[in-house]
Image (cartoon, rainbow, N blue to C red):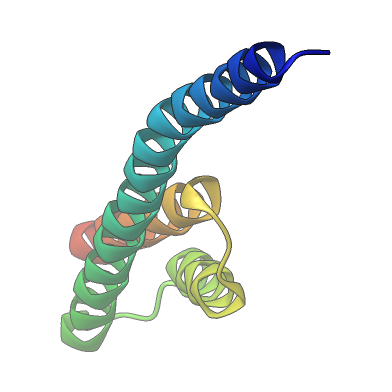
Length: 101
């Protein structure tokens, strides 16, 4: 092989690597940002449900179970799907406490 062929192969490999990085890095950043936003929303929903629990005059066992599940999911961590599930549990618990049943 001549030196020019090796240079072309090296340049091609660098172009492929640069293309891979140009595609994968923004996707990773967007996924990480989505995960942070989902967990922020979940923590806010858990806080809202906790406030509703403290303000509720009656005990609501189903809401207690849902809030406990949301807090367990939050403590375990995980991805955006776990955060969305925790937020949904907390919102349902909040709704039950607000309804008083």
